[in-house]
Length: 345
Image (cartoon, rainbow, N blue to C red; front, side, top):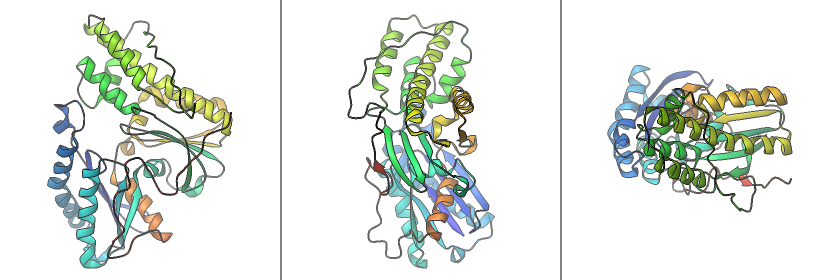
């Protein structure tokens, strides 16, 4: 069996799978109530909360499945990217649990695992694929020709899409997390949408994302508006539309350049209803197989860590005791096999 541990940001999650990939245990503990007061994740609060709940969650996984730690083949743990304190919490726990049993540690790339969650088996992925990871910390597009190798094609140069949702919700006085709050509020709108304009960004890669200008345009619009119930719904719907339009623009341009057979989309923002509808219509129009992460696995979770960790273990990609080289990935990197590649127009 493989034990999976996920503590990259503010969700603590534990999963247990056997070597066939069967799910024996999976649980997620959310910290939304802790961070709601601040309108966003506070790293130190997140780290301490992981410390409080992780041991009990692992104990529950073993007890509820009648599993002795000695039956584990290895422990898969998120190695990055993410908040350093949160990552260190999960890694330190994994090391402490694995060392007495001399179990190998399986470092899992958080971004890669989100794409892994889009399919039951990556063996069904035949032909070129484009993968979008869209969340509170990431808005990345990858070319995938031979899983798990990935070429980074496009990324945000400032805020991620989920962060734009969070900040927009905070400006409107809506609760954290911002994505679901904006979506619920936008559903109430009956008025024509507002155009939120932003300056064009100049970057090395013209297909990179940028949400900071959109956030500024939205903030200025809110300041000039009397925000009653009707206007709050209109503003939320306009922000949601602008974020999704920017994402779809980059996807459409990269698909035109790459001509993929598959489109994989994972991460917390992939749960957004408007985005899923737009992606579904786009994929059908272009004849592309769309693989959306299940809603239950869109947010950070340990099941994707355990499943991807199981496959890495079987491929021999793990760190044996005493784990001297095992530490979090640097914040700006994802898996070591990911390389930057700018599409040629």
